Figure 1 (cartoon, one colour):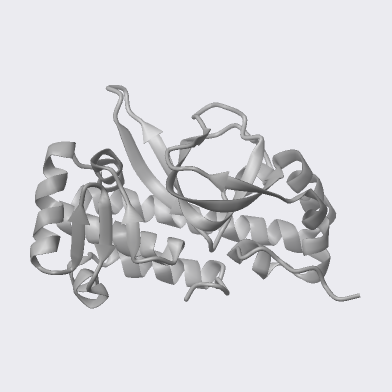
Figure 2 (tube, helix red, strand yellow):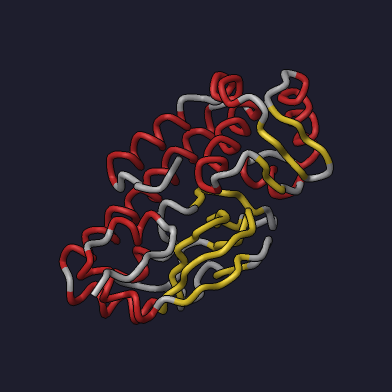
Length: 238
């Protein structure tokens, strides 16, 4: 019998046939609608998400109500890997940043499958560490680098994770991504647009010059990409 076809997600692509069969019967397909809240901090995460298209933003909420983006998960990985290995209580919130489609599986089912397979546990750990590496790099980036270079980094990451040069982003979403106030977003986006690196209009961003945007970005984009390549070696990114 021919092997079952796999959804277009990097984590699922990385699994052996035996490991994929452990999770395949429990996979469902869901729409990732923009701004959909997947979990709030301290809630129990009930489902893991494996995007085919779209981007999930991991966020922390500060005391004054601000939300700050700390990492992104897209078509190369999985949201919920550490929850499937242990405590499913969410340490941060998660919301859909770029709409798309995802496979999803109950955390309990994924945990049970991981109990049966050391190689599946290893893949979950590697993907979880890749996201953790991104969280660390983002913290350092937001503390040390300019707003302009942070926005360039985030746009390049989103382009990789979504597979598209065209993105729909509100000013509030951009502010969360780069750890800046909303009133500075238009100024920074305008600077990149004047350099002909992006076209920005009413929440729609199109990347028009990848090389220029790459030169504007800080080293954090390359650092995160190198960590992902080392830890999970995604098979589907163009």
